[in-house]
Length: 476
Image 1 (cartoon, rainbow, N blue to C red):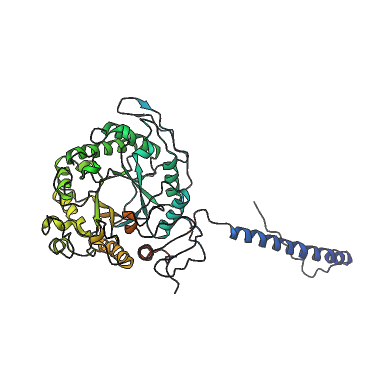
Image 2: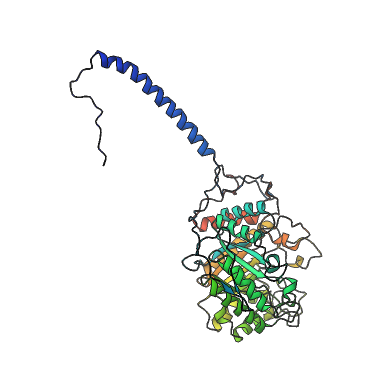
């Protein structure tokens, strides 16, 4: 219990001589103490103010390639994080050989969420390359967060983690990537494919693949929010140089779904995005035909969201696929199957064709995840992408923003994550095809080459999400 202490003198009381002397001594002493405390407080406050935020965007030299930019004087606040609590010791998991394996816990394990992450319609993602350069990865994640994105897509190549042999896992880089994504409060979508040489090619390697997914899902339970199971299996080059086979891929998808869900029921499973192609051969199968064959093979129960690729080619994002398929200004005039219905692939809204297959198969309640979309400004005359380059980076950025706007206005509620390409690998050069799709120039950590697409997306996404003004906008 506390009580108030009355420091006021009694009414009409008069100080005597001793009191006068005491006051003469006390008053200067009190004043000196107050001055000292004020000075000390000022020093402490100034030091605290100078202390950097742990996840604030790094200080970099901006070298804009399209217009002057201004960096906000004050860094944006870091994402709010929930203090981590240790997980209970995970149960042993069983491999395809029937052995019980004690999983190795991640050194910075966080508790699993209370349920699957909620996917907005649309939700905003970007593919990044966080694997090789930690300092650049940290910088890029700050740009992704500050740009208004909520998801980051990262390739977890099987061969990078278990490349040395069966059960010989190297988690060092994967641990760092997951920790960094957590630091910035982003959701993580991982693409899992690219078998190590010892495991063989699909479909023969499914037991090994399931064992790898067992280890991966156990280590990162509650931290990897979504898994993409393989990539573009409708192409022979992505299917171990075997003819594409939807039934075989469905078996892989089923094994992947059952394996991950047994360990982490809250993780979302996304089917592979298919390559847009009009070719039907031993090398390739059109994406619509492949997806329909997946449904026929019984794939429906084994994915939470359908993966799709939505390259824009030459067409603006709003253009109707039927118009594109019959207009030589937009379809690939070198494609012997054009004009015609198959040529609807040459535009962003081809995603609607894949959605219709879901509806026709009674799967309308699921969302579509656009795993890749964008436009290229590839200036290399000998490039196979040269024919559908857009005029410049301003058109490129405008189309990306308009794609998000179109999806928000026309594709709700079935559209989920939309992952634009790319936040670039810092080592890419103009000789790399991916360089020309990227939203900014590849740059090391002590430099930052912004382009129109990143700044335009940053402005739109922060506005539509009700966040502060994009800090990379030009000063007014």
